[in-house]
Structures are given as C-alpha cells and as structure tokens.
Image (cartoon, rainbow, N blue to C red; front, top):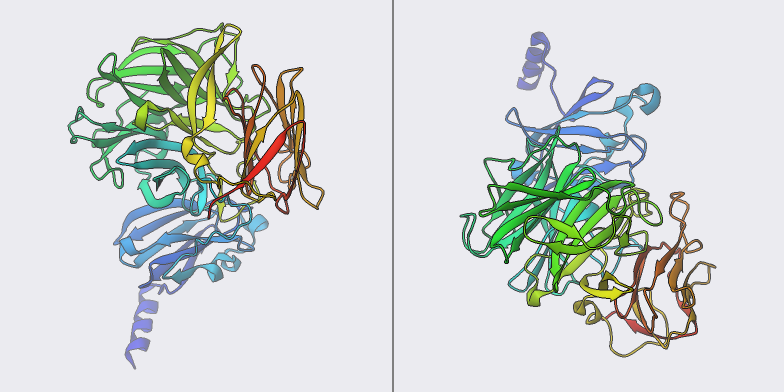
Length: 562
C-alpha cells in the first residue's frame, strides 16, 4: 500500500475528511483552504445577491473578517483579498444568507469557479463614467471624506471605504494624497475595523505642540467605532498619516444616543484648547480638551434650528473672518430630496455656538442633489478653509451605473462669507488649484472633461450641453426671479433609480455676472464666479456631451491639461 492510499485509509477510518478546494458544511456554510504564493485571492462579486460573511483563519485564529456579495449566478467584477500579510496559507470560513429555494444549491454557486489566485489586481481606469480629475477610490465603494489635513505640501484625504465591493459595507478608512488637489495617489487602507466596530467618519489634526504626547506634529485621528453602539475612538500617526496606532484606552467618548458619530476636532486659538463637535441624533454636541485625550462636554446646538427632516451628520465648525460657520450635513431632508449640506452662521466662544439667524431659517451650501458630507482640511495653508464634498446622494449612491468603483469627491472649494439683505451666507468658490489644471487658451469644441468660463451673463441666460443621442443638460439663469437651475431629466442614463431625474434650482442672492462650470465624465458643477451660488449634480450620458449652446451669455471652453 503506497503512502497516499495509506493516508486516505487513515482519514476514512478516523472519520476525517480531507479539504482540498472547498468543503460544504450546510446549504449556507462552506470552508475553503487556500495555499498559494500569489499575493491576491480575487473574489467574484454579484451585486444583486445577499451578503456573505467571510472569516479569514490562520493557525486557528481569526485574522480578518468582512462581508462580500460573493457571486451566486454570475460575476459582475472581482475584488482582491491580500493574502501576503498572512503568509499565503489560510482557511476561509464563509456563511451565506438565504436558502436553496432562492439561491440554488451551494455547490453550484458561481463563486467556486470564479475565485482565482493572482499576483496582480487590475485597477486600470477603463469605465467611461469614471471622473478624470475628481478623486475616486481605486476600486470599491467610497462615501464620506474623512480626516483631511495638509502638511508639508501634501493634502491628505481619508474616506469611508469598502475594499470588498462597490456598494456600502465594511467601513474602513481609505487614504489618498495629492500635492495639487486634482491628482490623487491611493495610499492603501489606513484604519481598519476592530473589536469595537467598523470605522465610521471622523477627522484628523496636526498636533503641532505635542499636546497629546505622541510627538510634535503627530497626526491624531478621531473616528466613530460603529459596533453594537456608536462610540468615539482615537488613533495617532508618527509617519505623516501613513500608518496609525489605535489608542489602547478606546473609546474616548460614549453616549446613549443611537446616532452618535462623526467627530470633528480643531484647535481653538482663542481659548488655547482643542474642541470637538459631533452629531448626536438631530443636534450637534461640543466638547473641549487640553490634550486630545480627556474630553469635557460643553454644550449642544440644533434644537429648533434649520432643517430636521433627517439625521444630522458630519459636522464642522470654522472661523471665517469674525464669524463662525457650523456645517451640518443632513440625510434625508435636502432641498431636492435625499442628502444635502446645511449650515449656520453665528458666534462661538469656545463653549457654545449661537446662531445669528432665526430658528426657521435654513441655508444650503449647495443646491444640487450630489453634495454631501462636506468638511474641511485641517491645517490648510494661508488660513484658507478648503472643503471637499462627497459627490453623490444616499437616494441612489449604491445604484449609480458604475461597477469597479462607486462615488467621487466634488472638486475642492474655498469657503468665505458675504451678506445679503441682512443675512450672512457662505461663498463657495473652486479652489485656485482647480483652475491651474485647465488650459489657459480656450478650445473650439466641448471636451468630455472641461472648464466652461461663462461671461456677459444676461438676465435670461441659457446654457445647454448635448450630444447626438438627444441627451442634454439645460442650465438657466433667471435674473428676474433671482434663480439658477440645472435640468438633468434628459441627461442620459436615469432609470437606475426613480429619484435620479431632477431639476435643481438655487437662489442667486443678487445678480450673476459670470459663471464657472466644471464638466467631468459623470458630473457637472456650476458656480457663480462671486461664490454666491453652487450646484453639484451627477450625470451619466451614454455618449459625452460634445455641443454647447449658449444664449444670453458667452462661453469659453478650457480643456483639461494632459
């Protein structure tokens, strides 16, 4: 009897089953042994299926666990599981939802044929709707911008990220960097889920005076640990935000409020202490600290003020001139449905924010449907307030017609203030770095990625972008009624969600003399050149718009630099 036959006989006699590819333990449970020298295991995803829970086991210990919509009938795309950190020899413990009446027989699932070992993962930008100059995840899902800061000439952007699918799940902080706010490099996963929960939104600060004791200029991150409850945790980095060490004493702030999240920290020069503002249900809570570790509750703001049609999220508190601006993102409740960004202008003494407007006044930062979770960069140069929005809407973010990735950030914008009829409002202007990315000389033809310089605007101006498929977007300035509108009802693909079709309308707070319009492969952002109006909308034309028709204004087209 040879050795292989002896081994098989021993296993059969002892009741042990040898595991080769995968073993089916029930209709909903399988295990798969992986032994490979390749870096990645490519997992096939089918977005219409339920979520499978995967535990990666090494030496009888769970070293990673995540959710993934493993393919049952067909593969929409693949996502990579990096095996190199585990030595290439792991056991996958997989639990599927549903039963065979709805999913079929487990041994026939498409994923078993689709799981592949590979030394590489293809991240080439091939999808026609992927933006050319807006930040997007290299692959997978992205929502809120997180932890943004500027240091040593580099802009750091963290973001809510799902590495295992292009829909919301497995919240992790992804990380990208840029030197010009227009070209971004993906730096990998920065903060990953742990025993306290998934990693929800938060902020980073540069601790210039070493108040926390992690070192001068250490980067200190605050984020929501989303487990059975939502609590606030802390991590620090001594390598300029590339890697983080989580505080052993997490969480640092807790509450009995179910929606308790999105801590935003800033240094208050007037009081010489740190402040933290976070969302708690439908109010914002403010805390103070001398050292970033021990936090004292100061006050709350929100009851009776502004829009309360949804949950308040992702706050920011900024001093602009002699005023303070409290940013409050809300979902739902936006002016045209779904998520949007409202704000309040007032005073702040380091303990309490007081709004200047009457409680019933609601002010929106952007009147498009695709501007949310807007927060600012810490430590921006020159005292600037530079913000980035998430460019989507929770009504349809999971269904937009892309596959390898979903969601982008809007272009960077600088915040200021202006007054109109006794009220203070924010100005929103594209950051100076944005204009530098386009050719100074105008082009004769509209490009899929372009900046439109609109001048000589009359009180009934119209700008129409179109293609030969009959798809179009119409923008109208109505000076008599003081409004600017954008109609995307016939913009291209719209049937992926009933809430996508829309005509959005913004007040102009005075006369518009010139406009700045930024077109990318799947978005249009329009700004009054004086900053008094901003509108951000996604579009999905089956063919890029190549015609621009202007009435009551003049349009120059500036192409994106190569």
